[in-house]
Length: 70
Image 1 (cartoon, rainbow, N blue to C red):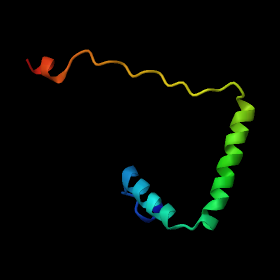
Image 2: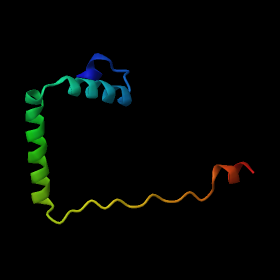
Image 3: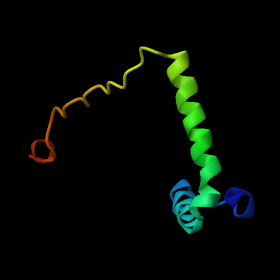
């Protein structure tokens, strides 16, 4: 919807505008999206019952900026 109006818009600006739009909605208007999110959560839980979010630690930098400049 936003991208079709302005094809040159960047993703960060789309996110900002979507957040503003979402903030202006009433709880009643948001309700269908909350229901959809809950259905998606339950479907994922059923499809992957043993899933547990376990992010991997980010790799450490080998050199600091100061070491590279010296």
